[in-house]
Amino acid sequence: MRSMPINDFFAKDGYIREDGRMMHDMYLWQVKTPDEAEGEWDYLKPVSTIPAEDAFRPLDQSTCYLVTGDNS
Image 1: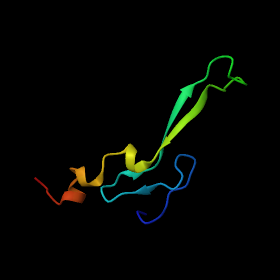
Image 2: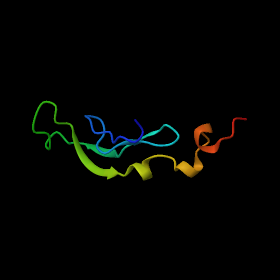
Image 3: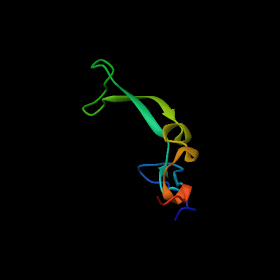
Image 4: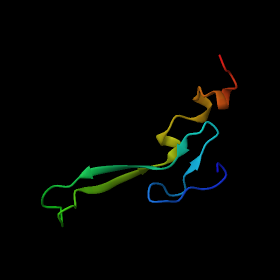
């Protein structure tokens, strides 16, 4: 499963890292003003996409036993 890319409603081009963390891009959204909204559920507008590598702790900083091999 770790070798398979994850593409579903939640994540595009996601993957599972060696420590078991699911890596995927994160999104920053801004609430629209009432004038910007075009419909009943039109509340948010995208501001930016944060790449997975920037959104999560780097693997070399992981304290996970699967990465470090330290079971103490």
